[in-house]
Length: 81
Image 1 (tube, one colour):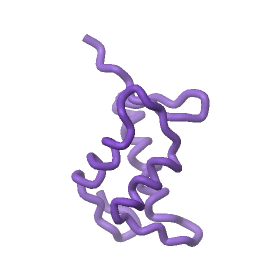
Image 2: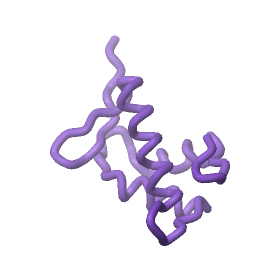
Image 3: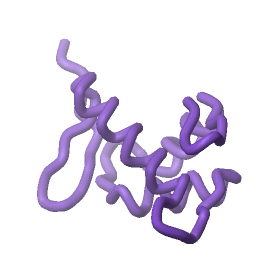
Image 4: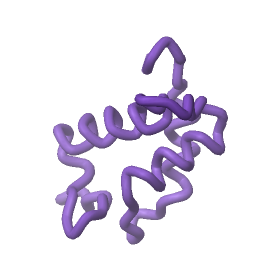
């Protein structure tokens, strides 16, 4: 995924998600922080690359039905059988 000219690999996204177990909810800011700690630039300016990447990932996951937003936090949905 390319965000503001920076390529974010699926490996980085997968590693960031391991910090949030399925039973733990998280905020977009926490996801952005995880991405920053994994090397995504923060670009402390008007648009932060890590924040924008977190926003795009959350939009993608919401549309795919894998994550839900409730009470100010995001949580992974359990797959239905």
